[in-house]
Image (cartoon, rainbow, N blue to C red; front, side, top):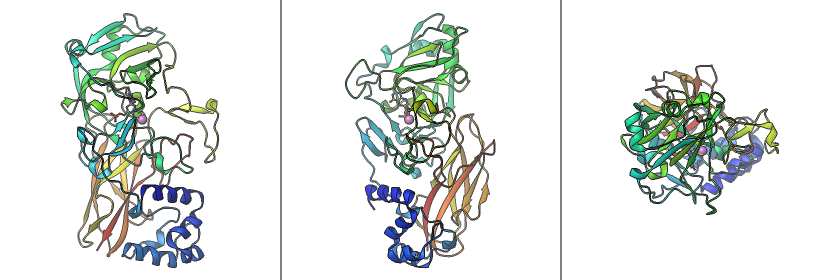
Length: 437
Ligand SMILES: Nc1nc2c(c(=O)[nH]1)N[C@H]1C(S)=C(S)[C@@H](COP(=O)(O)O)O[C@H]1N2
Ligand SMILES: [Mo]
């Protein structure tokens, strides 16, 4: 199935699951299926399409395209990257297929790219300057990267970065923006200095409430007076020990597309607060008012709304900590497997500013769940790895579902949560298909 077809079907499934089943499985299915469960005839056509029986068919919900039929795209060529899928080429936005995120620490070549504008062309790290100012900065100061290295303690931390719009492609009706599936997430190791050390050095006035960033990228319109993006975080987040000004990613230079030579990392919040090509920080006495700070950007309705509603900006609130989520990175969706062998299952789980307390796996469409331990994070705001296995009872088509819970008892929803106009914060369970023979 092409990406377009899959997207169309996804929309139809969201608005009218019975009609979608009819279209997908044929007329027979339409007659015999009821909302909630696929019945015999639909299963026959599904089995025929897959060439496999579906041992847990009785638990299979309607309104979900089997993971086996998710659109697959061919990887694209991007310098310094490997296997990423381009969603947009101007500005460049590219996501990482789940199975390429299997490593505990995301390698530079597999880190996704989310650009709002055009990256700077020729960057000379020797002459790069970072200006710290703003109305609540006591002593505005300009630093070279060498100054930062010499004056402040060097810190290395593994930090998760997830775009607020990751998972947007599943919202119905469709939300405009990059149609991320699951791959706008990564968790590399960053080296730099603590943001708070630099801010304190310059003096944070008592009335400071926010820190805003500016980067050296330019607006796609070419207009030099408009910033592509200029966001930031409240002082409390900026002052956390994990908020960094980083010059290195996995002990190498930060890749150009990921912010070379200097970037901000405030992990656990939408990736958009972590400014790339960082050249200016402003300590503000009000909420920063840079580009894409105001609703509807990176904002969600402050109470749930009907899908497709128009929501006034005044009824939106800015996204802070991201919700609990997990990703299955092994097996790759669609693989064949000898059903007599246990199947290893691996992945990661993360929960914004919080920790995950466990991951649950299901091979029967969510009817039963197997608790799985998650490892401890290498440091706060790093994802946690899980590794377990499942045993299929007989040959057939299965889906492995993963559902993480955070340490506050909040769990991932099994289906796409709270529709919102810009399609943020989809933390529905990840599903991968396995053909056990
Ligand atoms: N200067 C600048 N910083 C930026 C962006 C940008 O377009 N320009 N994109 C933001 C968004 S929306 C995200 S999700 C992350 C993505 O980081 P990455 O491209 O390194 O994965 O960077 C953030 N920082
Ligand atoms: Mo983002």
